[in-house]
Length: 190
Image (cartoon, rainbow, N blue to C red; front, side):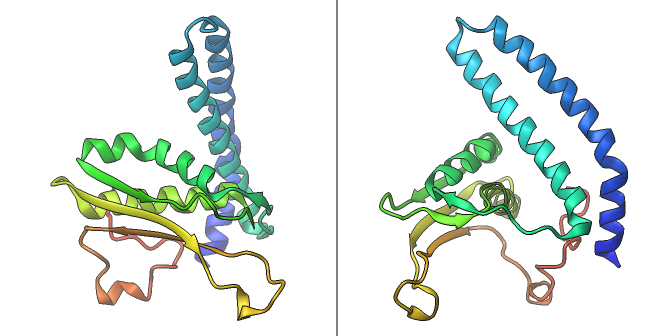
């Protein structure tokens, strides 16, 4: 019932969200033209363009939510996706004095994955870790490694592992069974 309600809600607000996103993209396009000779400013604007387009994709995903469309899998460089996710959250982490320790292998193969979905998962995990650590500062560890192939069979697609851990408060025992409920949260209004 919650999923159906979420699908109906997303369809109702998607058009309202897309209108301001289109306006933001138009203004950023205008600013990009004016900033041709300012590479640092231009880089920041390009991050805004990319993330605004990602927001548009999220709105599209909300619409697809009710239809449960399959992920769009393509050969994906996880290192690149991880770096994009880190760039999105690095300001929030720095504001709370959270150190991000990366141990990323450079020899991992590309994997078949939906890059936007993986990035969204990583951003969510990093922001949740940041919230769990709180104001006093702490550490988030992010690592990648090779993972055993499915069933150990020869010819299985390459698999990799991404690990995120933090020095935050953790998840209480009574909430562990609910971590995959789409609308469950212990954050209140945060």
